[in-house]
Length: 343
Image (tube, rainbow, N blue to C red; front, side, top):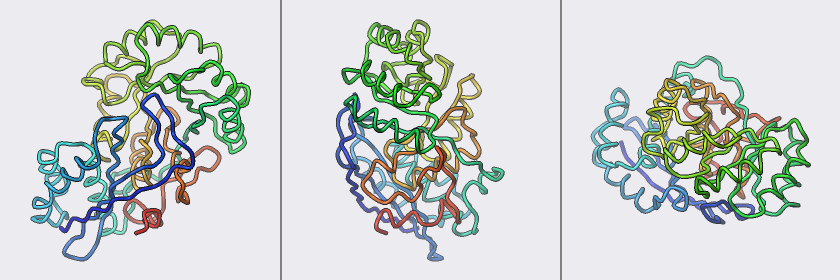
């Protein structure tokens, strides 16, 4: 197979601010794998250095390291073995995710089947998703919450650990009304005592859960034991899926190494008793589509953080309807996704 890698740069409609920093543009790598039959499968690499510490250039290098391995295969019958060799070569899960997506897309395009069908799922239901509140001021956050409520969302995610958390969360609750779930995401901004105190202060607003209030497995376990709010962890903490330390786990395609790794992580998480839901790291349409196909198998327990394409200043090929996202139609990862990348 022939490997092609292209840089994609998308502007955000407004700065995306979290405890990890502020982001104005989103850089991705579009990956194409072309077989000898001329069929092409597409994937994307979506590292976010401020969030996971991985630079785009390092992911590109990891992908380039796999070029000779890919050249010796057509990807038809040895997908799992090929991916395993690439994983040992590239190491970075972001690179493996891009190749995994492209291989699934290639298999679907060759067979004329959607990826969810290749995964053995039944007809997929639309996936319930949360709206993300991107504004850091009270008035702006309240306006976004009101728009999300009018659009049919039933869950909101609010970034915290930014200052004036109590004021923004109160403004969001007032605009959202009593029925909507409010999820917090601290991106590990707090210490254990800070997290327990902050969640105690925010709990009266009615909080569904808080993602990553602190960094570290044992620290998460301590907050989960002491705070009056349910806690969620992501897959980045070493050993996070070996035992249950909190209520739920939030899994991401890019951090798990693609659809294959995501399904494996979800199985392990469920086996130790976590509730599971999915999220993006401001992925492009291929990454979001991949998560939707995987969700047909995983059946997430909570609304998923996948409605993020609207934060980017390009036409959204996967717009939410009444707070839900549908798996895109067509073979592979779906039709109509590549125009977003200019491909």
